[in-house]
Length: 243
Image (cartoon, rainbow, N blue to C red; front, side, top):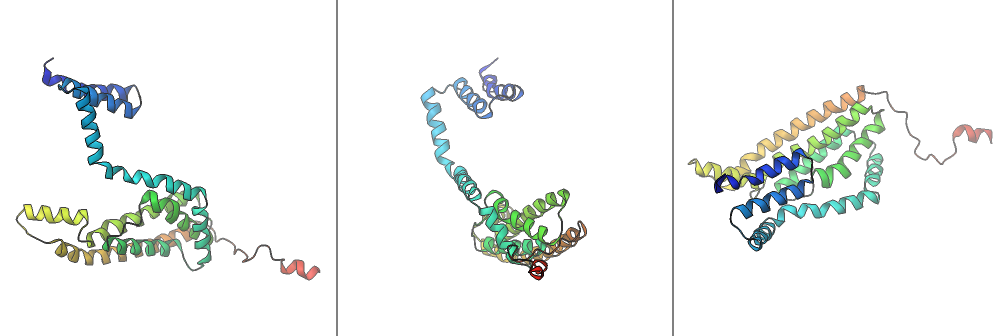
C-alpha cells in the first residue's frame, strides 16, 4: 500500500468504528489523528491544526450555549406560562396563532432580528401555545397532537425561509447576489431584498389559508370540549341553592 493510499486509513477507521457502534466523537478524533500521522504531520502540528480549526469555526458552536438556558427555562415553568397565556386569549385558535407567528417571524427576518428557531422558540413556546389553543376548543387525538407539532414547525420554516430574504445582509441574499454576479447578472443586495417582498406577502397569505384549513380539520377531528368555568374554586349555583 503506497503512501497515497495510507491517507485513506481515516475512512477505514470511521467505517469500522460505525459498524462496531463505537463512540462517534472518539472514532472521528482517532481517524483524524491517524490520517494526519500517515500524512507526515507530527503530533504537535496535529494539535495546532485542531486548535486553529476550533478557533476559526467557534461561531458555529455558539448555539450550544443556548441549550442549557432553554432547558432551565422549561424546568422553571416557561411551558406552563405559555399555556396560561394562550388560555387567556379565548378567541385565539391554533390556526390564528400560527398565522400570527408566521407573520411575526417574517417581520423579524426582514429586519435581521434572530429571535427564534426550532430548539430555542418553537419547542418551548410555539408548540405548547398551539396545543393549548387546540385543547381549549376540542378534544385532541394523539394523531392530531403530532399534526400540531408539525404545523408549529411549518410556521417557523415558512416565516424564516421567506422572511430572511427581505434582509440585505442575510446569507441567502448574499448567496443569490454572488451567484447572479458569477453568471453575468450584476445585482445589489437591496434589489434582491426588494424583489423578495412580494413573495413574502404571498407566503403569508398562503400560510394563513393553510392554517385556517388546519383549524377546520382540528374541529372535525374531535368532539367539542365542554366550557371550563372561569373560576373552578367558586361554589356552583346548585350548591348555592341548597344553602
